[in-house]
Image 1 (cartoon, rainbow, N blue to C red):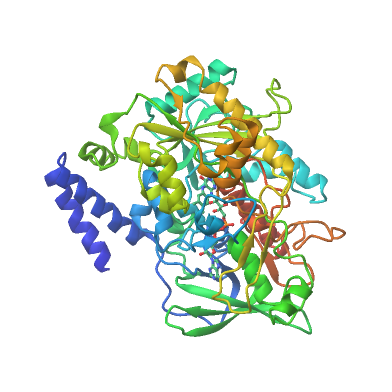
Image 2 (image 1 turned 180 degrees about the vertical axis):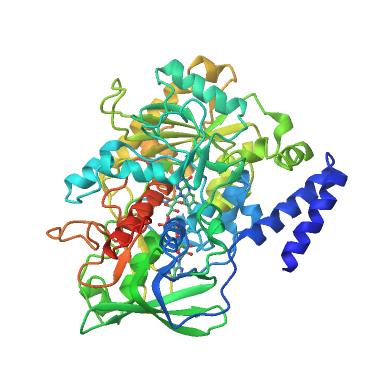
Length: 614
Ligand SMILES: Cc1cc2nc3c(=O)[nH]c(=O)nc-3n(C[C@H](O)[C@H](O)[C@H](O)COP(=O)(O)OP(=O)(O)OC[C@H]3O[C@@H](n4cnc5c(N)ncnc54)[C@H](O)[C@@H]3O)c2cc1C
């Protein structure tokens, strides 16, 4: 109640100072207050039994909780290890900085001799959202579905019901698509969903030059969430009126007042309770931050939505996973499944920096003008999705085919690693290497582009360190274990270098920054071997970890869940999140995860004989 009063009082103060910097500050406080007031409350009462228990309130868990509580006769407990989403997390330009906050699980890959060589201790940071809304709160809001072939391949692998034709209605169900020019394309888009997809209102001179230069190179301007993917576009972003459209804001705020919905934050699930003789999952054990332990039953199902790192971790801690490995770490094995295998990700060659003569000088992050533009109207440079502005898709195997299957994405960013020293910390770059390479240009005008590998062949694995639920899992992404991945990423890099020579890029005097990475210098800057060495040093995750509880048919030895997302060999247990993807789609993984959860929710309703028309 207190919070409502505070928001109410602020709504009277704000207009008095309208137009001034103080007015903008009050607006920020008012919006923070509204965010807190709109978030569902932490339940004070935890029942001994619910119909469904959902583990993890990230992209998928938020959808599942919303859709299952549509049935007033079912009650649902949603358990989230992290705390509240704050309004400051939803200001798009700040996305990068959230990785330094407590909303990040703060994982790292194992030290490697093949990748992440330019990072501290040869380990890459692996951020994941530990907050209401999960990784959808940390992400860069880039909204891409992938290509129709991704899902047709899933079906061909034995996943009945997952072809593009089958998943398209669920992509549409997610969206409130308001991208001008494409919003009337009802074959591919809808305006009835919870997640607003829009163009960020601000465009920098660099973002515009990137689109123009791509078109000079031969790319078409495209709705990459429509019929085909190849081409270039300004970013389509999960953003509503210049504010992040996180999973929690989109799916949980609207159900704040449902009586059959209980949410518990700072609640870490340590184990799924499984009866070893019936192999029925009948509940969960979880602990609050104060160490208080709860055992709660689920009369229908436990639904694990803990994401691509934590879902396999929780399954293994509960006795579901590779028998030999579980025995090694002292977990009694209940069901021998390939949990934790098939770890996939999209990676890019990081650090490619281009110097320019344009500064968009009056749009600096710390300029009062930028702050005033954002509060109260949500315009200006703060609306850039973590600085990402322009995306293009290329098929290096069939460069001339407009209906090709992209294997490279070019992601153009406003600013670069040298824009601020804080980026060194965020990306975990080795200090010596960072200052030797970028020291001379820190704070100068520059931008960065990520050539990103969309169809990696390399596969990694997640294992347990031990049988303690608080221990971070062991993450081995095995990037570049397939040489072909390295070759393809270099092909993408070369396309980029060509595009930066086009007139639009040259009109802002774009120039590749040529300071060599010390350990790669001997290869000769700009040779294929140099670029390969750079890729192995600045191996940048694009944060699309998935596949570790892989979906597959009954005769697929590597499958963990069936095509209805039920864990093989255990009753009453599903996994619904990015970990079920059998092969990584060519899109950034948030939209596909929303789709999986919408489809998963319908399957659960069907299996319990309930549809919204009942
Ligand atoms: C920094 C970053 C940038 C990204 N950028 C983009 C982007 O721009 N576009 C895009 O499409 N994708 C992006 N992604 C990826 C995308 O956000 C994820 O693929 C997607 O959010 C995955 O959803 P999920 O439901 O599988 O997992 P998550 O959203 O991560 O949700 C898992 C939830 O479970 C909770 N949890 C975990 N273990 C437990 C436990 N034991 N008990 C209780 N709760 C638990 C977590 O705290 C979390 O809230 C990005 C991700 C990150 C981290």
